[in-house]
Image: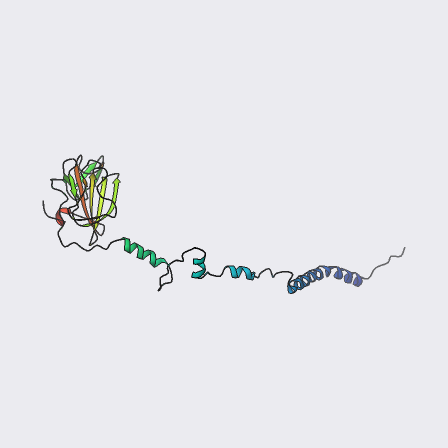
Length: 232
């Protein structure tokens, strides 16, 4: 029986023609989409609609006021509203000058514990900050200097506590007070004004019972009241 062989070149041409169908189809699809976009039937996928851009334009002050909103007050130098917040803080925080008169003791009485005196609580040794002044129960406590009340709280160690801020970065601290002192945060007090009464609210101080815990700080550093005011 005679065998018939097909030439290889015609077969190769047929195979190449089949492979060209897919690129031709892709090209046709791309041309179709391009024609639709050019005619305006479709939007270019990477373009942003003009309406969105118009809606996102910054509003003017007149437009904001028309909508019932108050535009923020901007600083003329920086163009931001941060300076206005700082100005509000400066307005609410009074600037204190260093008093001309010398500081006075908040009350009379013997010292039960001196500044930096070492005392023991359980198995722990502590260095006392400030002084503890012996006093009768509910004895009046006076402000040592004019200033502004900076803190009123119940400290877990020193009990009811009042701190007054003075000029020159001074702070005086009065602790172991009776509940509910006479002053509140932000009150301006004069030297000698009664700010509270002696109690027994301190739990972990050097002294016990009824006494006044009195401390003086400048720039965060504790000072010896005896050296600041006068020897006792």
